[in-house]
Image (cartoon, rainbow, N blue to C red; front, side, top):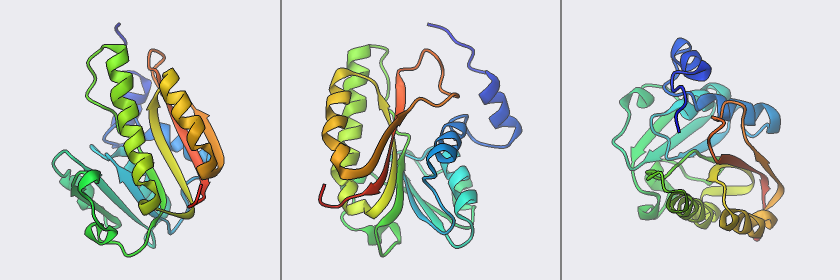
Length: 199
C-alpha cells in the first residue's frame, strides 16, 4: 500500500525544525487532554529520533525535565536541549530511577514506541502489544500516583482486551487517533490520566 511519505505533516515538521512528523500527534493529544504541564518531570520511552522530546521540553519549561530512553544510540541533538537528558538503555534493564538521574517517579510517561514492522498484520500487532504490555508492567515504578500517561497501540482484538483490563489503573482512560496519523495506519493512542497505584 502506498502513501505520500512527504505529506503535509512531514513538510510542516521539516519547516518548523522538528525531527519527525509524530510531534503533531503528541501536540494534538496534549491540547485535547492536557497531559503535560509546566514544571513536569516527563519520561519518554523509545524517544528516538526525538520529536516528542522537542515538544515536551518546550511545554515543561526550564523548571521541568524530560528524560528519554531508547535502544538506539543516543541522539546528541536531544542532549543539547537544556532540560533534556537521553540515555541508550533498555527499559527491561532498568533497576532504579536513579540510573536515569531522577530521585522520584515521573509526573508523565509517554511512549510512541513501535516494533520493527514486517508488513504481516498479525505479527506486527503481536509485537506492538508486547511493547505495550511491557510498558504497563513497568508503569508502577515509573509513574507517580495521579500521573498521566500516553502510549501508542496497533489496533487488534487482543490489544483491545488487554487495554480494557488496564482501565482501572487510571481515573480517566481515553483513546484517540490523531489527525496527523496516516489513514492507512492501524495505530491509535491511549491516554491515561490520574494514575492509581493500586489499580
